[in-house]
Image (tube, rainbow, N blue to C red; front, side, top):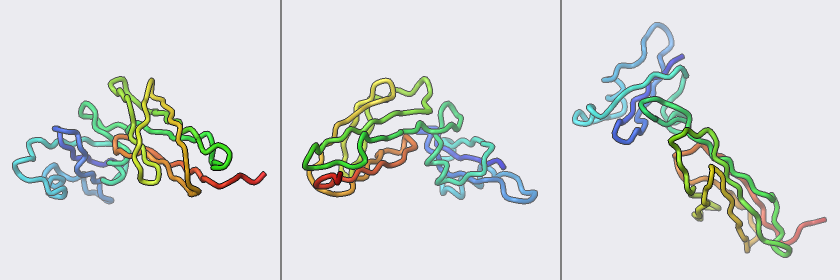
Length: 167
């Protein structure tokens, strides 16, 4: 079932997405989408629509899709991994985060990505869509590592820091 995307041509931001209603109704009109997205009359000239062959709503589209050259495509995906899921603070309190970016297009050029570890920001330098960062922990806790930007699709990784590892 198709959906119609309303987006701003100035920054390619997805403003609203509505799927075709069930039954015989057609996709929403341009005016209907603008009204639903509360687009002011003086900004309608900057809006465009694109139809995709998926039943999708606005939040999901903003998370998964981006507009490139007037076409909706999947966002790049940031894959985060850690070389350890459990870190012994008494032995070696370091672990390495590896970031790989997939689902890119030729025009994508990423030199760094902003990450979070328990809401503390840090950057990872990227070369050829990949990068590593050594993290040193000082407190026993569960640490959630996540990507901090809506340019990508991303999942989180969890690392647990303990005083010592049981053997």
